[in-house]
Amino acid sequence: MTSKPSTSITKRDPEDECLIIATDGIWDAISNDLACQVARTCLKEEGPATALRRRSSSHAMSGDDTKVLFPSKSAFAATILCRLALGRGSTENISVIVVDLMGH
Image 1 (cartoon, rainbow, N blue to C red):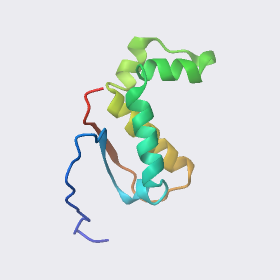
Image 2 (image 1 turned 45 degrees about the vertical axis):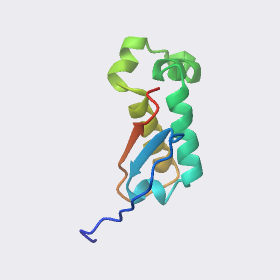
Image 3 (image 1 turned 90 degrees about the horizontal axis):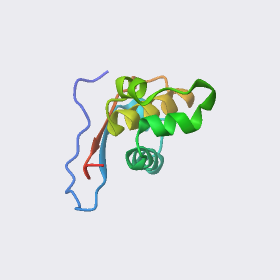
């Protein structure tokens, strides 16, 4: 364990859609391209409630229920990335924040 984090400075492009800040538990299990694809898809969805309703019709939740679970599309994207890393067997600390740079 080290107390010195890995950091980088990257110039933003006006076309950047989101920023994904995550621990090794995410990056060891998910490629950069896949993480971006997941985040982009979640941010462009009509909303987490719509995505959940489409994927689980037998356990449909109301829009109010999903607002409690996922207060924003960014939170929804972060949750999906965490679950994907867990599903791929990540054993590291899994933490992720998705920042919507386009205001979806």
